[in-house]
Length: 438
Image (cartoon, rainbow, N blue to C red; front, side):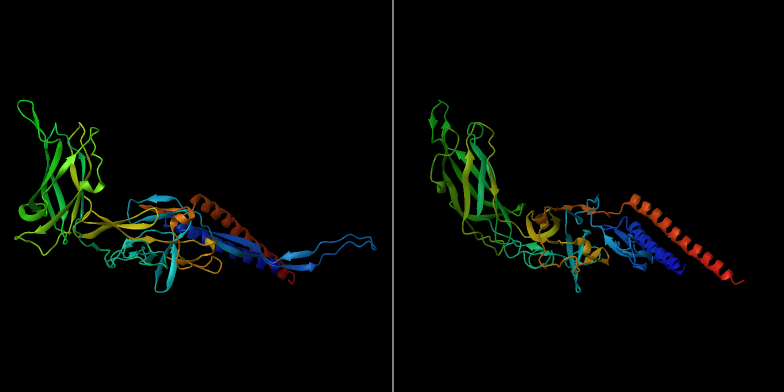
């Protein structure tokens, strides 16, 4: 009877442990990135009353089985189930979900931790952090804005020159589109370029067709175009701020087309006009221009269609400051600047483990590596290495299944109730034994 009492007590304890696990699962049903746990029982060592015997031909007796009485049950494992939770759309660009295997790498002064909860934010110093203030780790960029995949470190979006872009002077402009002399023999355009401080200058450009037909129907001039660059420039799109620049040579041509409407087959360099721009006496800024701005006319055509030739500034821009960022499916963080340009700021790395269920929960949606999960090499890997991707504007929901947990709750309650009956029944039997003395 004493054995049955202790067996009943052990049954109560393990079912209480299982209820604790179920309660924690249900409590975290809406916790981002939470992974539910399961409880596994086993029986404990049995007391052997008699051992097994083999058959004996001499005595003519067969073998007998061992007689054992179990001594109760025990919790053999509380395991974390690492299945992926459902996707919760948040439309918050700071939220990121891992679609596939792996964990975000976060850290503080105590070391690395791992999480599936991608609710990120940027603090006042530019650090990319999770909701607990832990630093999100990944790879930074070199001076050429290329990702350097070495040991991971906290990602900072403001460090170095990431928070701004220096201005750059223009050295290349390209004309594209169509010239149609019958529709518009004198086509007026504008061309924009930048100086070393990022100030913009807009000048007028005239493309003039050189052949005309007089009143007698006689054609004069040549069937080609001449380009003329005006030296009066509007500064920084301010119509009241106009300066005169030295532009040499201020004229380019001839630009000739064949019968198919494309440029005559000439040397490639012939349709690139090296333009030099310098300040006159009315210098506004302590700035300079590129020694040569190459104006490329190779992409012009002369078809019988709309005259729409335009000039595109290939490079050069004003200074810009970081106004936002986005995280791509590959984890690359791209900064957006006030001058309309973008720049790579870094890349989020992930950690993958041979046995993710072997990770140890550390609270706050964090996990720590253990000897059974596998070690973290300190470098990490791209999300795409395992066939996964990052999903912006989404979070991974808990993988807790309420219907399953409620079912487990019912069976656990019944198990606890049955074990309590063992104790009360054994107590009654002990009471009957005590009453024998009366």
